[in-house]
Length: 179
Picture 1 (cartoon, helix red, strand yellow):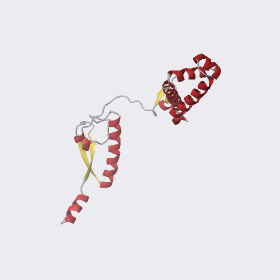
Picture 2 (cartoon, helix red, strand yellow):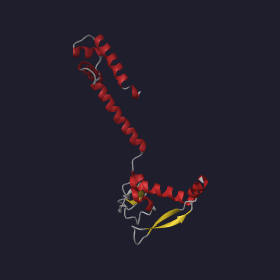
Picture 3 (cartoon, helix red, strand yellow):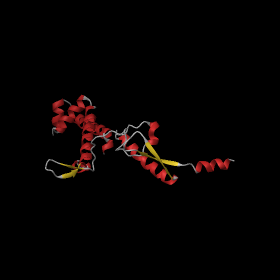
Picture 4 (cartoon, helix red, strand yellow):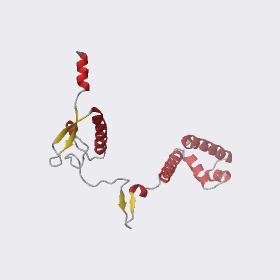
């Protein structure tokens, strides 16, 4: 008795929905084999999900069984022009090129972003220094010697030397991800 139930399930007839061009709200169900159904179903689901992610498919979930991925005649598909990176478009000189050709080289962009992130990290690390250490750092970056810095901030040269080594150690710790 159990075997009969399994056989009837494996012999279940599958159908492909074919939307009518004259009436997009109705479909004709075409009988297909299980293999063809599985192959078509994968393709239909892939296209429908792609269109949903792009914001063009608004088919209610209870009507997915009607979806044949024929978006041109589907009443739940948003019509209109959509740009694609691989579709050729004409520029101002009437030359045809794709949008992907016009986008900046990825390596240039990544280097630019990395440089910006590094500058922000350095700025945050320097701003975390005490006012005295910041003043020593600023004077050192201006090219002053330890002796000149010591006379400007009114402290011994050895103190400037020690503070400079502490500052470098602190900055290296805070920027360790970059080195």
